[in-house]
Structures are given as structure tokens and as C-alpha cells.
Length: 395
Image 1: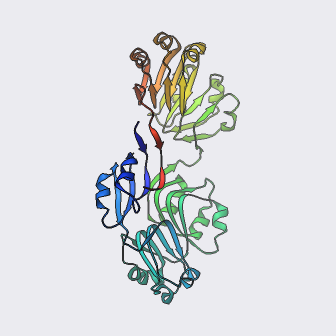
Image 2 (image 1 turned 90 degrees about the vertical axis):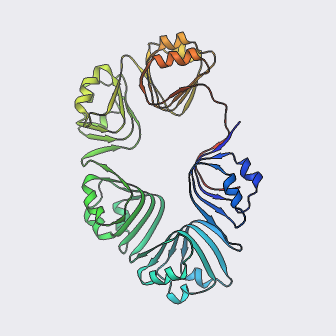
Image 3 (image 1 turned 45 degrees about the vertical axis):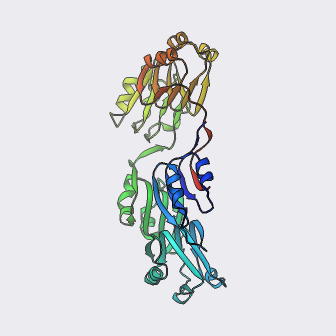
């Protein structure tokens, strides 16, 4: 069995050996690797995809991953040397003076961003020259967020002075955000990641942005569906008279009538839509994007998310032939017969993966393909300790 680890933010090799590196197996993308002098051979022993950066940690230095905030109390409490490599960001608070900053007890090597008040930007740059840091000044109240930050009217109203937003992840603006309040309470914004906002908010935010990630702009006047939605004749009612925007699938149950769909004014989708054949023509009239795929079914459909295992009994339990939409992973057990696939599967729209050890069953599934953006394959041996995204990993 192969041991696999997904993406790792920071790989810590400070106490690693050749044996521990080899036992880690295969690692996906690595943001940064921490190592000491004399451990260069461990870097070549890694089985990994892309490595963002390698950081040599000098002897006597500890390391810190994330946001390190330095204020007056922090500096005044230092009574012995503190040597540290910071991988992430360092924030010097506004109550720090140039005299305090000059204290020799604090020795930092910074790989990331160094935020300092505009009055201390030059002194901070000279004080901490090591590493691959980028020095950034701020004048207002700096709010650093590592992850997701949603800006609401109450968030802005609570700010006593203009904010400098620094977001490493996603910045989201709520739908009914007061634009004038945004102009007043946001001094500057920098986003390393995704910005999600509405069309009528774009101009005001652009004037505040100094660093910008990618943007997802929601059309003004549209209701944003944040996740995949399964709608029936009852749950469709809240969308009456509305325009709908989504990047996720919308699944219309067979009890949704034409008059129900007619109550939705418009649909703008960057994903696909599942509906009955009776609604297909009307669905195209509602779509704002003609490139949106409409997956129509005759009698019923089965939507598969996550991972499922089907055996022969489950296939036989399907009444009339159904359209199968696979978004996740479908594993077919050894007892599944190709005849059952031919009989019970009306069509197959594949966005994920189907696994079967039977070549006949795989061929039967492939013969039903209508949309093929996934994979039909043999069963794979289970992967030992298959981990996904890890912030920091020590070997």
C-alpha cells in the first residue's frame, strides 16, 4: 500500500532523519520546507510535487508558523534573547516605539509579510533584514485574517477608525453592504486569494485595493445560492420572482411543474442543471448563460456526492431506469452484473469517478455516458494513511 499525503503548508524537517522522510511516502504540493544546515540531502530524498520555498533555520533559532503580533507588552517582557524564524506574517502594533523596536533581545528571520505602522516602516525594515519578507506600512487599524473574512454592515459600524484589511484566503462582501460605510471605514485592503462581491460593490472596493487576488463578481439583483441545491415543488417557493446566481449544481425534482419554474425570473449558472425533460425547453429560456449544461431525465435521477458503494441488490432496487449523475465516487461491488447496469441506468453524467473490477461492468457504464468529465477505472488498492490538506507537518 502506498502512503500519500495531500497538500502541506509547512514541512518541518528540523528533527527529521532519512528514515522519517522515506516513511512519509508521497507528498503533494508543499508551501515551504524548514531545514537546518547539513540537512540538504533530506530535501533531495523527498517524494513531493511542487515546493514553494525552502527555509534554512540557523542553529539556536526556533520557528513560528502563522501570524506573530508584536506589541509594547511583548517587547517589554523580553528579558533574554529570542531567536525565531517566522513563516507567515509579523504584525508590529501601533503602540510600539522605535526605541522598543531596537531591543536586541528579539531576532527574527521573516519569510512572508512584515506589517508596521507607516512611522516605523523604515526602522522595521532595517531591524529585520533577514528572510524573504515584504515590508508593508499601515496607518489605520490593521485587521489581519488568515482564512475567510465576511464584511458586514455591523462589522464596519463597529470599527472606531478606518481599517486596513489584510486577508490571506477569501474576502467576501455581504449582499446589502452600505457602500458609503465601506468607503468610510475601509482605508486599504489587500487580498491574497479570492474576493467575492456583488457587481454594484466592485467600483468602491477597487479604490481601496492595493493587492488583489482573483474576483468572483455576483450580478446585481441576483440571489446567490452558495451550495448545490435540490429543489422540489415546495422548496422552490422562496425563489419566486427572483434571479438566481450559482456556481454549483441545481437539481430539480420530478414534482417541479412548469408553472413552478416560471416563477423564477432568471438563472445564471457556472455549473450544470438537472431537470425533467418536461422542463428542458423552459429551462433554457430562464438561463442567462447558454453555455450552462442542462441534464434532462425522463423519469427519475440519482445524484451521487461523496463516496458510495453499490451492490447488485441496490441496482435492482431502482424502479424505472434512472439518470445517474456522479459528482463524487461510485464503487461497484463484485456482484454487480453488466445486465443490471444496462437495464437500470438510463444515462450517465460523470463528473467524478466510477470504479469496478469488472471490464464488462465498466464497458456497460461507459456505454451509458452522456457527459464524460470524470473517470471510469478499476478498483485501486486502498492507500495507507491517505491524508488531505495539512497546515504543518513535522517529520
